[in-house]
Length: 535
Image (cartoon, rainbow, N blue to C red; front, side, top):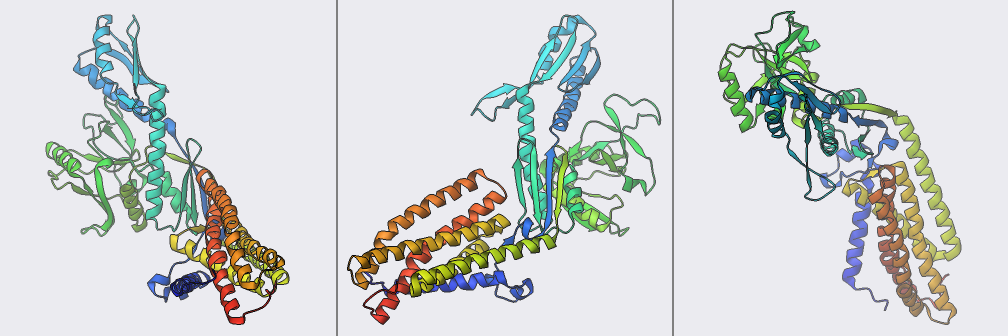
């Protein structure tokens, strides 16, 4: 029946009004939008190809993760052998293992037992609940010893490093205030970062290029200037900014990390109350605070090196125990450098360095050209559709064109409300969505013609057309929607942008073609009471 309840008409009109109202801000300038009520300030976010910005392809240095684990393993072996009072020489590591030579072959069994205690169980990510040993220990009859990182251990560390890097890159980029960044994993060890509208890509590269590993280590006071470096210590250079204040160019520091940046819970830029220079204030969690307090109370009078990415920022002398778990980092920073360092520390340290292997910058002029070309394509497509519908279906063609405009408004509104990003492929998806929307109207109108040819009067013909075309419309739109969803699931970047706009367009076309068009056609029929349909 062609009876439409009053409540359904009211709800449809409210939805149409809301769709138009929330679509308008997208076509206004940001200055004008700022003057609108908060609820109406939603605009479509433009992608990198439409508003310009930066495109970075980063590679996670997995080898550095393995190397760091091997260096830590060397220290574990040194401590273990010292505790067991086993003599050895030649302790060091190569690409995937730690090697040493036992002095006495009589110590082989004791060494084998002690070193196997170092190995830990690791989980196998591809097999639920499965574990494997991290290290294979081999000692030959001559006492030559090798601790080999297993293939599973290397893969486990690589996988964890990439996942952690992805999360930390997201945190760092989010803290810069970049709107709607696109950060996705590509391949096995790469991360794609797209920053629409970013005007200072060099700063982003600096932020992402630092691992930001913070460590507090004691300065080795037993080392003689220019002399040999004691076992368990190493020479680290002083940060260039710190060199400007004078002092030594390098420090000999103990390898043991007393407190690490992993215990940080807060970092913020500030100004030193005495010097007025920019500094970074930090605070540890409860475990880090206790450790920091213990170390500073036990080493009063000793220099305590603050190390960031292998360079000494400063090495202040511990004057008294610092019990509160908070402190201050000063290093001759500018205000922006202090802000960036605080940001890096808040976001966390990268498990491995990131190497920029591809960089592209899209200028706003190119984005404007893309928007202009996309707009022209939409207008030409819409005008052609309007012309064909009017020529083919007359008055009902005009009704279909009105529904088409509403479809576009609804698509824009939904994208703005959900925060979707519009890209150039997304515009293509929008144009295809318009074609799909008018396709539903064509099915309905052609069905009306068939009903009229069979001798039906206008009211029964329209009723039958909408009822019988509904199944076909749902069928065709559903198959296209499934294809769009699959594109979203297995695609990335531009492919996802295309699938999102196409999906939204298809969903909106179901409403405009079946509900809005039906209401307008029925309203016209009740008003004019024609003896024949204008088709």
